[in-house]
Image (tube, rainbow over all chains, first blue to last red; front, side):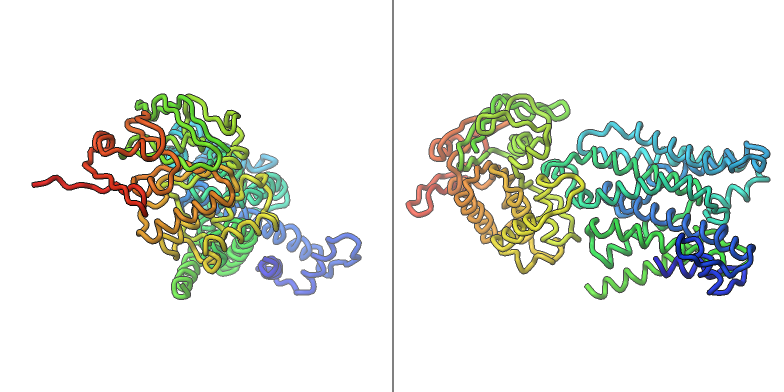
Length: 327
Length: 258
């Protein structure tokens, strides 16, 4: 992860010297007494453009990977991802509505899109929880997943309709859906940090209990935990964190599935290892993916969701093949 | 600890699968629950472990079992399900370690003490060499021993087993049951076990409760409960019971004469 941060801080369209970037970063650490050797413009590129982007990328990547691992654990479904309960569809609808119906949004102090996406995501997941509540004592997980599928389909239908009505904002909506960090700022980081930090902290603390959940609800109950309660708490935090993450980054796919599964192949199936490692590797993966997204076709940017899938999928296949060979 | 079940009834959906069932077993005893398929044996075990709702009372050593306190209940009663859900990628040791869950607060990790208990049980069950092997890579008998290991590290005085030898060959069946019996004597465990093989039940149990359609047909000493007429009536099978001085009672199926 350290490598990813360093690489991302030093590479960009503006040609800044290695020492200049380093001195700018060190100058932000109090009591070191280092002064930036870059011009004010250069220092501001490093500190106001590149760094918030790196931090936001790290937060979003960590959150999506941890949430994905958690969903896979509590639903015992290897294909579960953080968008399982309709967060993505809800956030997509929220963002579409904000893009299309809030006129003159540039005059707003903060862009209304993230807030609308967050509300949409939480609303959709809320619907899923309410609709998926009944299902009997040991069918709760499956019922919740099915409710999520229905809610996601419903929200996506409305979103597609709304998007088709307003063709002039189609591209803006579409580029939000594909995901990206090009508008990252310290203000955005400040807004999402509490949600993501709290969610990740709670989920990582539940790592041992997620191992217990792997024997199924009934046996987990016989081992002294309340499986349904554990699922509700972990899914709530994972969903809240995911909604906060996608509200700023758009719908970046694949991270929530690929990172936990790659780690499973490398570090075994125990959540004691997978959750903390997902945090680190999810962050590193998204920082690097964003570096590629903003440099490969520079000065144009490729949507981050495209990069995560384009590089993530072959990488995952290589790891999969190697692990099969070694076993 | 002794186990006493008083007037237990369980309704699943619209069906009352256990009706007004009472039985008991003393400290260190082995109670066999026998009966045809669908009689309600597994449901009785699930009620004791607290994973189905029931009416009636379960009394453990004179005190009513409080299943609201899940952790305390899991320290009192350990459960070996009939078809355990095995996380195939998990190592044998990590799996057995899950049995320490009732002793850990939700965010705590296992202590050296917990690890020692797990390693001791792994050695006892001859799983020491397989500890790092994934559950999906061990044989059926080894996996079943791992499930028993998980229940044993719970260090609960009451061990519930639901047909623990289903799918095992003769040698592994014997191994699992003999081991359970040894541990019962060592640790003074009280065992309540649903069993389908009546000869095996006769060999291991101190007491049998015959259940049919959710109701107790008879409870008592093995020799009282097992009679050809009763088995014929409730299992729909024709059997001969042979009293062998070395083996004990043998319940042998009898083909109809042509």
